[in-house]
Amino acid sequence: VELEKSYAKKEFKTSLVRTMSHEMRTPVFAVKSITEQLLSSSNLDEKELESLSVANVSAKLLECFINNFLDYNHIELDNLELNLSIFDLKELLQETLKLVELQASRKAIRVFLRVDPMLPQVCLSDYKRLQQILTTLLCNALKHTCRGYIEVTATFTATQKLKICVKDTGI
Image (cartoon, rainbow, N blue to C red; front, side, top):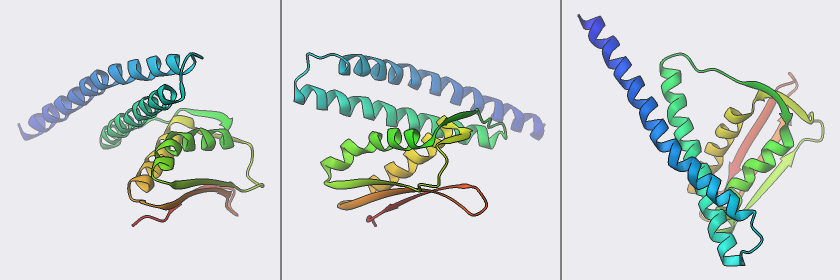
């Protein structure tokens, strides 16, 4: 009986998380799509462009939060899957830093990227998960830094492993 209750509780939680994520993703996707479409328009003044950029970045960060929530659930259920692909690592790092640069500049925080010249240009990993982890670390650094800088360094260890560090001047 206890085992059945535990299983039913787990199933309910899984179903609830799936439903919530779908319900949250739909409007976030709409906001991202609309802001990206408007950002590609050439009829925007500087203030409109900045406002749309903030909305777009906010939607991307909200999407990251939703993905973190879902991943936590997958980890609890022991069924987190990786989607390996080959991609340009420096491009991923630069793209991810762009997500926080606007908010950082509003707080007068400088954002630096330092890439080891020995780092291979391409990487075999889960692009979305790596970006998700880095975004979470950058958002945390941004949240706890009032002034100063955030520095991201990417290096290759002696054992041929990627090492990404996020350093900030926050508390």
